[in-house]
Length: 399
Ligand SMILES: *Cc1c(COP(=O)(O)O)cnc(C)c1O
Image (tube, rainbow, N blue to C red; front, side, top):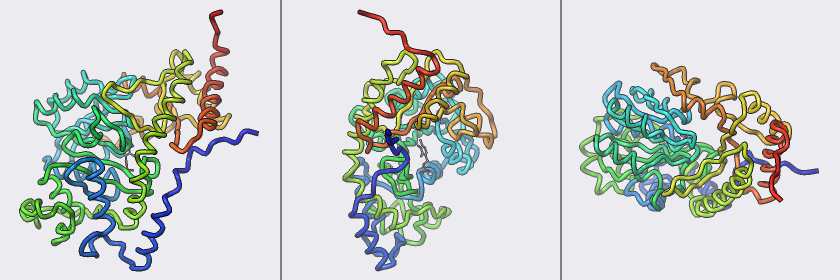
């Protein structure tokens, strides 16, 4: 009997985390601002900024919290319009609403990346942009930065699923004014929950640190505080505190995973490309290619079903599931949080026919980086067999 690969669990947390957690259990020192210096959260911020090559990092409770604080730290007025791709997770437009701003959605192409034509058309009507690199698919950051810089529109990168992805060799999340990452369990580094923002902008960071909950003079416990002192002093008592801090426990779980990142990225990409090559051999499956300057860090695979009716796509997903592989078709599963028409909490609804058509045939399969070649083959064989079951045997031509 073939054992189905477990695609739900993350990797075990490195053993070093236990020692750090034991020490915290002993001391009871779980709050980031109790220790005068070197609290695990503060050390994580220093290490993460170094990893990404940015001046500053601020660890918070989630990527959604990081996005919200980024918008607040930009000082956008109430009802400012913020442009986002129509293919992202519901938490992204939600963070905009939380910041008293208005989400504006633009079209996304068949390759899951921002449609630059629609983006450009809508850009003059917005005050800020969140580039959500959905499922780690990087939109064309050269074109986006040129368009936004020319209009002085700030760019926030939602790099929740892009840790380890590079663009022209530069880390995704460091190209816009501020980048936001997630440590939720389905991302490259897993703390259950958690997020972090990175930026080189001293004023923005000082504002975000205070609003994250650095009350009184706790900002002094942030690395970089001496050079930021003027900004902190300026904003002292001027900003509301939203208390979105990270606990030392989360940082203790995250820090020992940082040295694992390069291996995870390498394995995730090799696994993804291996499965992509096999799937692309089917005339009914298309895995979009990465953009030229992009080096991806995937822990899942997305592909489009080609020339299949909605009914056949449903049959494919059912056949895969019956064989033990869960396929999410973004636009077909009920109440999917990544289908924009389910964001009925938006004040303005958007008609995005191109994005809708993509979502109706784009499939999503988890590929945790720890899977072996044998396990990848089991998954791929099932996907190909399920397509075969729906469309009939694939004709073989040639000698
Ligand atoms: C996971 C994810 C988020 C939300 O991250 P949280 O840390 O759970 O708030 C936002 N955007 C994208 C693209 C994501 O993948």
